[in-house]
Figure 1 (cartoon, rainbow over the protein chains, first blue to last red):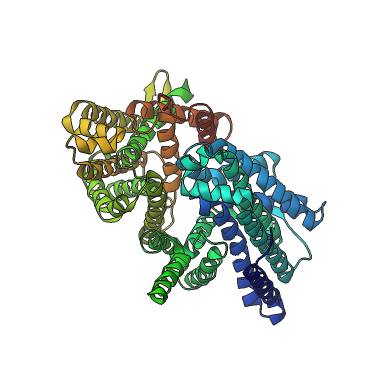
Figure 2: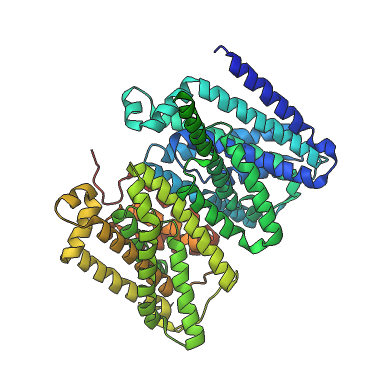
Amino acid sequence: MSLTGSDLRNLVLAALALGICALLPLSGSGYWLGLGVTIAMFTALATSWALFSGPTHYISLATAAFFGVGTYVTGLGIDSLPYWGLIGIAGAIGAVLAALVGLATLRLSGVYFVIFTLGLAELVRQVITWVQNNSGQKGLYVLTDLDEAGIYWWLLGLVTAVFVTGWLIGRSRLGFALRIIGDDETVAAHSGINTARAKVLLFMVPGAVAAMTGAILAPRYVYIEPSLAFAPILSFQVVIMALLGGASRLWGPLVGVIPFTFLLEAVSANFPNQSTLVIGVAFLIIVYFLPNGFVGLLDRALTRTGHRREA
Amino acid sequence: MDILITGILLGGTYALIAIGLNLQYGVARIMNLANGEILVAGGYLAFIAYVSLQLSPLLTIFLVAPLAFALNWLIYRVMLQPLVNRAKTRGQLETDSILATFGMSFIGVGLMLGFFGGDYFSYSFMAVPLQLLGSTYGANRVIAFCMAVLICGALYLWLNRSRAGLSIRAIATAPASARLVGIDVKRLSALAFALGGAVTAVGGALISTYLTLDASTGVVFTLKALIIVIMGGVGDVRGTIVAALLLGIVETAVASLLDPGLTLAAAYILFLGILLFRPQGLFGKTTT
């Protein structure tokens, strides 16, 4: 685990970029801060999503389920526990839930996993609605003295944690095992890798991160109800952003999050009814024109210039 | 008893939709997640024909089926065939087709929202009570069930007795070997995909006679159809029918005994049971 010169340089650059991002609330513009919160939220979600789906090629649509669980943790516990404690609890619950989902589905082929996660948010929503109907309670109020800047800083901290985790996984035995699984699962199994265990362990990362993101963002909603907390569209947005950027690199999703956030913002401001259409078109563009995302485009451009230099 | 019959009536239509999806997934190898949107579109067509022309849904299906067949054939040829050609492994095709059909599903929802708005639509067709074994049921449900049985039966016979059906079953079993014995895999895959879409759309037209639909309900039906296909086993018509009836009964039982809001949870419990104990499907054999 020794750091090379380029590692150190990247680390310093990343820390600098983080420092600049942390200054955003000082600009005093509510609009930009709002956008910053959205971008930080999707960066945390999409980057952690890609940590799992990049190497395994499994498409997880469970983000909204974990996110909703996280908001409910904050909603239920905000009166009795400190905010930071709730974020931790949400992370733990998210990880355990992800492990359960993973244990049920990841031992089998990828299709089962996609189908299971597709309805997961809806399933949890139905159960919570049912529990609420039976206990006669409708929604939850989350009242804190946390302002938008505070939420932003918390999210930024989470994003940092996600990047550090991703970097550490990439350097660990687990990361190495996952790259082999992604290239050829049969080879991985034959060289003694417990593929199911590695996949389940890795799936716990996006589970925990999505739940923590939900827990952090709960005060922003003020009033929480199931249809808001478990909006399934969130899962799809995360998939698009991560794949648009490229799931093969740690920083890939970030490249997709920023333009797509602006695009969705523009679309929902000008044509509020067309956002489903935009999401559909984005999926098709990814499949037919950008199978490796922006990162893939960049890689291809780099190899082309590299070849020219050699010639 | 009530629950059992209502469940079976519901399961009959589910079987139709799931067989449509099973043809698309089992033969054409496309995990079609836009299946539910085709269903809702079929329902819309039946709704429009009934409201503006007073055309009975039982007649509309003869219009719905060819339209859906043509549309799905085009979708397969234009959008999905390139993915099949490009895919190096089965897994890659699965990922690609899942993402592509998600895109189509969202575009379908977006278009239907644009044309018809987000309102629920329902109409009253044959909503007369019918006595059956001492209890009363809506005549529309019974008719939809009978139609579903007819169509399922016809499909079953066609798949098991005809030359084309034999070829299609061969592709479902071993696509690479099917080519070696002179089966035109590309043409028949497109045919199976289109046929699956047509069956699903007819299912949608039938279901719209007794269920309320709206532009974004498609995904719920996609999910249920997927669960049925996996429960019944990919490419297995008999298993699909049994699984669909089972899901219909369990859903009705949960809806009437616990809460109508928990139907998806019921489907999930069945799904989990299958995943944990019989991942090869109800009648599937363990592959070595």
